[in-house]
View 1 (cartoon, helix red, strand yellow):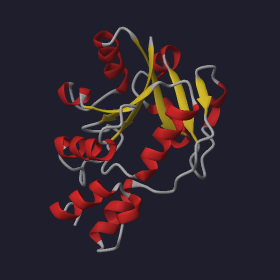
View 2 (spheres, one colour; view 1 turned 30 degrees about the vertical axis):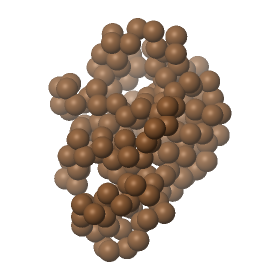
View 3 (tube, helix red, strand yellow; view 1 turned 135 degrees about the vertical axis):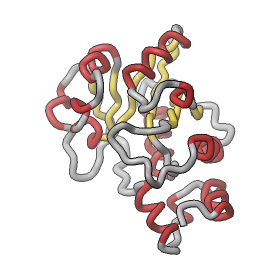
Length: 191
């Protein structure tokens, strides 16, 4: 079974913080590869500033280019909205029975994980690789046997910060992979 990390997110846009964490996990854990699962709509977030699904998938592909450790995954584009992780995991398991899927998340998400739909099922059937987030401690789930805390670099870069920078005409070049920055700048996104 190929051990595959699933990094769910809006990736609106993907930035160097996402990529640093992804690379750290593939190189410093037992994960063999990592899929960036582009979510069309997070049920816990507003959709107001969300770029089109296909645009965000394209941006993830620009960011990871030909790195065989990574894959951009659009599985949730064809699933009912809003997207629920438990359902996505069931579909992925059916489509890829020879893979062991694990979830990747920050401690901020672990702290609110009990708000997710069907969270008990997910916790009992999947392993979690949890990276540190400033000002969060992950809550009570930190000690669950399926939760693996990883000592990945702490990143204070956020997609919100990048969108705000574009909107306010501030530079964000070094927070993004070069091809992603060029594409967002040329297309005038987030302005």
